Length: 300
Ligand SMILES: [Zn+2]
Image (cartoon, rainbow, N blue to C red; front, side):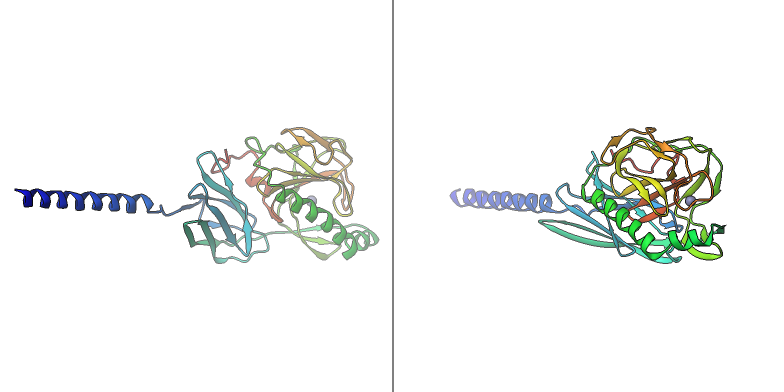
């Protein structure tokens, strides 16, 4: 009797220990991060969104076309960000690399992403040759770039949360005279790409903020004249160029549709119009992908 009892106790003990070990093992098992892309292919000038489900304490990094992109953790604990493709990127098969890392996990995985063909037409403008030489000189363009790059870097490093509020609106209504990404010739000399849209409007027409954002630059630049740059968080910027006046100040957080300034023709311009750009980090993307459109995934 005693022996059987001891045996039963021993068996029961082993079973209990096994259950404890099994429970410990299964609860310690780490869930594999889940990565979703809003599309597997995109054209030059497009952007897609990336969404990563990962442990709340993880650091998530996304690398695409040699650049790292910021992600934002939404209320569901999902990490979401934008991935842009420049009009300069060649079509082909590429990869995006996602790294998820915390104290117990280091996980890296690559996903295929295809850049499709996209033909950009030409755009030709003519200005007095002395103006072209002066405004588009290396010194003039370089000093503009120094100012705008610093404004962008400072904004990104501020870690501002997504500030936009629903879909982006047209800052002015009008005919588009020069489309996004066009190969620009000034006096028959190639001068890069057209980074945004030119919207024709009478001088003095109010220019409205396409969305809620922080004014990270408001001033006069050589090429784009009186210019306002808004930061909307998560590396997303809009800029408003060739204005005749500016009605906001650097550092202000302004609501969607706030008055930024008036349409003008300052800087290198052949007549009153608004040049508006959308940039993710330093990459110009097609404004029409944002204007009056909903994003695939919400950042809230
Ligand atoms: Zn333009």
